[in-house]
Figure 1: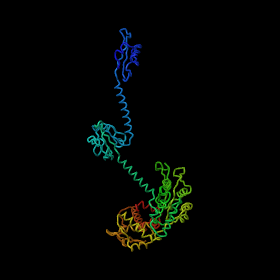
Figure 2 (figure 1 turned 90 degrees about the horizontal axis):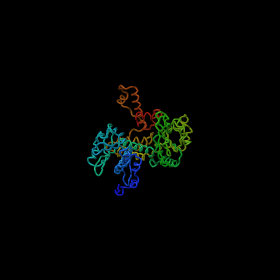
Figure 3 (figure 1 turned 180 degrees about the horizontal axis):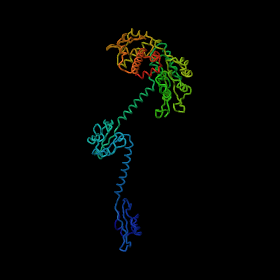
Figure 4 (figure 1 turned 180 degrees about the vertical axis):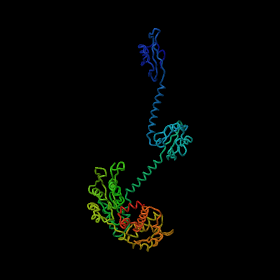
Length: 535
């Protein structure tokens, strides 16, 4: 107690120890057991009991106590340690990374929920078990760390019954420079791959939403093409709707890209929509989107649609003549009211987009036949731009040939230096029903026909030009009609695929011309090309 005996004996106990209760026990005769008492800097645990004589009369009181200050300090430390352990366990459980901890003997002492989800192993499978229990392929990084005392990083291995591919980071746990265990963080490679794929898709989407070409990419110095370029540059500075008209393969999409790039919307998205490739039943939902639950199989959260994705940018509607009449009415509302209503939604959505449309069809005749709305025609035809066919600007053919050869050299890994005068003259004299697209197709086939070491395209390298159709040999004719036990449906598909391929070859890749010759709609042609995987 720190009190000398001569200062305590013979004095009242409450005078010596102010907070004592021993005199109260003496007075009441009631014992007080296991009582904590603070005296100075120490804490005691005391039992206070009365002392009685043989007759039961209280003759005194006695207190027996011991110093529990150290015990109290240890208890507080234990409580703090428990709180710290609880907090650390909560932190480990909250992390998305899988964590595994072993002791100095390599026996599991801690895992988190992310570890269980990744490996498929529970605490009873791991705790107290060797560090190798979760490894399906590879060496235990825990054991390597315990053996070497050095951390490891990004070690590939497979873990758990499902043999999940993971990357492991592990480090030693040291206390007073002595290794007491090892902790490992396990990264799911499949998640990393998924994120990489999402990033790649995002990059593809960015490429899709950005215009790739400018007016500098339009090749030609003829008066007709320069006049069109000047007209397109002027309209690019405005927000007016543009209708690009011209034959297939003249470069309508190239002009659409260039107009967007030269406009004040160039930093916004550029959405290209091939109207001929969208089935009628999906036109409205693809263009304008749909609300969640609009129909069976609809995407969770709904779908924004092309116009929603193009906010503050440009929508390029290629083959505009292929849009059905019901969707034409909705498109008209977009152009007039600057709003649209998603499928399954009751509220209109405001939209700020510029529309550039393109067609190689005669819209005026389609209006007469009731296939195209006249009011939509006038809304689209605000600024019509007619792109001349290649046969009307033959003086541009040498420039186009030079440009296309450089492009094809890169694509084919060739080193073609040019084209002979005779071959170039033959190209100039061709009618070019497929326009620039056909010219690129012809040059590509000519490069393929070059023998090793040849770097100049001659007339013999050019494929047949014009409408002349190659006669089949007797052997080819027999092969074409031979029967090998197939069903009539299989034979019909085989025949149809062959006809489509020959029609495309006949028109130099001009799909619109091929559809006209086959007397089918351009959409029907696209569907068949997709079915037979023909480009």
